[in-house]
Image 1 (cartoon, rainbow, N blue to C red):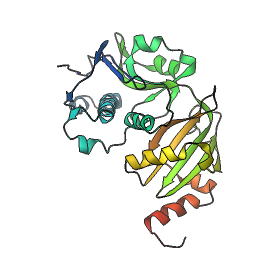
Image 2: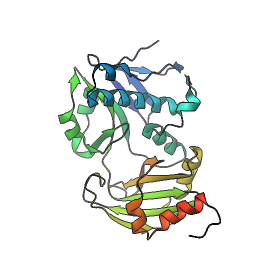
Image 3: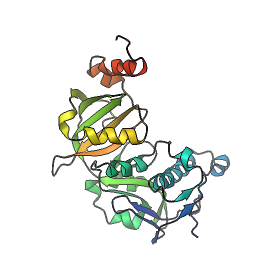
Length: 267
């Protein structure tokens, strides 16, 4: 039996190598057959600072993601929790349907992070938020010993152009996203250009991913591998922003949503 307890005075070291499917806790590789998981609500009651809530969410999201990606592990309330959007579980499912995903670690282990080139690597929260270069994330992180307060997603740095594909019922609408910024959402200066996603070699597998998680509506994001030019899957979001993309498409995105909700209605 293994315990993973998190609090202000204790940061366990956790690393999940998504591609190799290896999970380690405090340097020891684990393969649990069952897990009991509980969200830390009491720390926030004792200390209302936002960082405390963020730490609890990051740990819970990380462990939910690993459990959702491993259906053979006994987990109470699995059928309820698996419908919660989770970036980590989605990456694993995307690999299973044949989409290429970035080289990904989920970790708070400083020794592991210091072995990685910070210039070619990004870090982003496991739950929500924008990405930054790994060096910037490490400079802002607070640690106890060799462990940061919460795990983060650590991935190879990809480049523009980006691709966003909206799945709406039986339709798919693609957009090329050009931005000089690492995360185009931060400055809202991206150029959005409608494109046909069908010739790009990803649509069939993306639709399979959407069906596997029961999404009638969602948006998938891809970026480009600077070495090969190949599109690399980042995430599939069930509640994406769409107003700017709809404007770029002259209203076709909203028309597709209306058509999916009101079959036979004229737009």
